Amino acid sequence: MKVDFVFKAFTAIFAMVVVLFLLSAFTETVLPGNFYQISITDLPGPAVNGTATVMVPIPANATGEPVIPEGTFSGARVTGWQAAVRETPYGKMLAFTTTGEYAPDISVSFEVVQTEDELQRLPLHQRPTNLTAWEMKREPRLLVPVLATPDNMSVAEFTRVSSGTYTSVVFLDGFVPSPEDAAVVTFSLDYRGVGGTKRLMRENTWTTMVNTAVMSTESGFVPVPADYRVIAGGIGFL
Image (cartoon, rainbow, N blue to C red):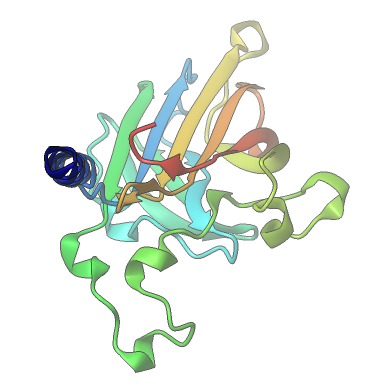
């Protein structure tokens, strides 16, 4: 009887040690972040002695607040282009401008990961919702501007669905291809907003993708479809 008790006690202690080991192995904190990849190909040549501009949506929350600092975009190095965030009639967009005779393809990615300092609880006067900075990163995110949503849902309502397609917008100006040189400009935009992992729990990941073709003869704002999807979180090591 005594031997059986000792064996059970040893088994329980061993199991506890194994659980603690697994917890220490799998509870690494993965910081929330925003990842945005932009590819625009087959652009025509700009107008002679003019300025050509291409604009694309930017990642933001449901209220339209950008989740990547504007300075990150302005500091982007894109061969042949200057990048900056601009105000438009639809809201803020990322603009690429060039004054050269040649408009090279645009390929650039942005990666902004939340810092450790942001995980600390904010002062009361800075957190009216009483949330930690970590919890604020759980909010849905997508590419804006949003011109239209299915069934005329509000943007906040739409971001709560698991998947759907809404209408965003791109912009072209300063290109004057001749009719015989008219071609298709391809926009490939891929955004991922990751909620991070903490205490074995992985937060949601919000994704928006735009894969569309626009005729090079277009000028001005062009509505484009954007595919939105929420990848549900869960246990971090599953």
